[in-house]
Picture (cartoon, rainbow, N blue to C red):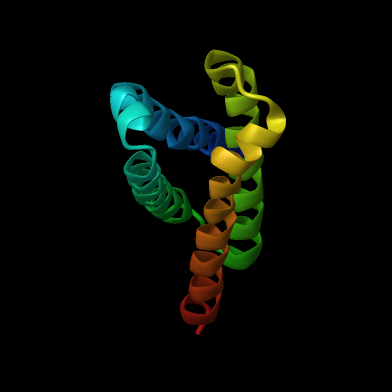
Length: 132
């Protein structure tokens, strides 16, 4: 019973932090929409930084509650959040911006690959240094 509750709590954290990881850059992009039109390259640079900062923050917060199997947990975390962010974008952002999927992948979607890259790096580090 206790183990089941702990797993449920971990899943809730995974979903909530994953949603917040999507929401923070989304809200920043909405607030800076005029910059997207006037200076698209600057806007894209800012969005990459915002995604990286939010990703680092939520990865650290999530992994701080992990006690073992750091590498496996971090790989699964990164893949899950990658897919979750893409799903949220396809459901909300793509129709809002009238984008097709090719435009979406080349303009926005590919950036999300940084999520599993960062989480896997953290997991690798924790696995090697925490287990000693």
